[in-house]
Image 1 (spheres, rainbow, N blue to C red):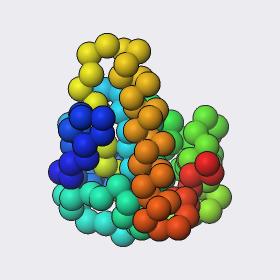
Image 2: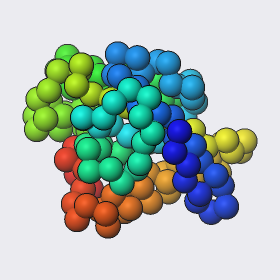
Image 3: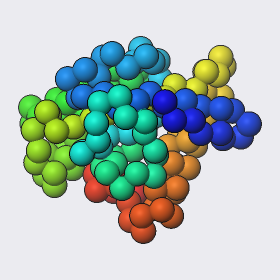
Image 4: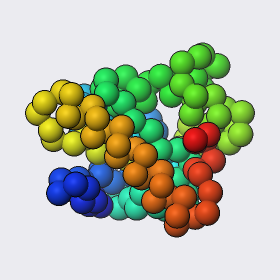
Length: 141
């Protein structure tokens, strides 16, 4: 796992999981932030600024639900996830090539947790842009 410290809160990301093993992520039934990448290895430690990351996303519902929405949009031509649509249109790789890592802030109050998750996504996107000079390929903003 890789660690990130934000606002005094230490966060741990999971290692990379194959897309078809996404439900094995420790925090899959919690809200959080997730990273999608190509070309990483299972169980490799993640770096949120890694140039192989193609999408940084968040959810205040469960990670499982949001990742399933991405799956339906990217691989079954459904609607409901902008990153999934971008993946289908830009990346065009089968799900076997996709990997996911995630973290779930352990904040008890829902309002604070939701605000923090949204803040964290933006912070990670900024860090990625500063490191790579561009957005992840499937993030539009």
